Image (cartoon, rainbow, N blue to C red):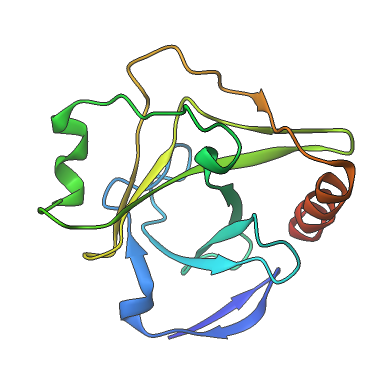
Length: 153
């Protein structure tokens, strides 16, 4: 599969490299196939690139890299679309937004990825997590992350 993207140029991916989000993402429900790509300039950032819209890429981080005590509180019903089985690996990722001097992540609606089945879903936690929580970054890391985000715009 060939994907012409704004951020990464032309990508050639196999279907088994894509994640299927059966319900899409909040605000992008019709976009269901996504590739998870590392940021070439910042190891803390990954990008969720739409397979059908080259202009849609979302910056993600692992929230536990910044907030050790972060836990996702959701119902079993919300996890059903992931078809989790014993021993399956799951990633928890959160979106990043912001500007110079203030980067935030959305802890309230994380993305959950079943690596074994290549399935994903975005959930809204049942506890009171913040929609915008400042990322505690050293200035050099913050500058690098802002540069990565700017290239996406």
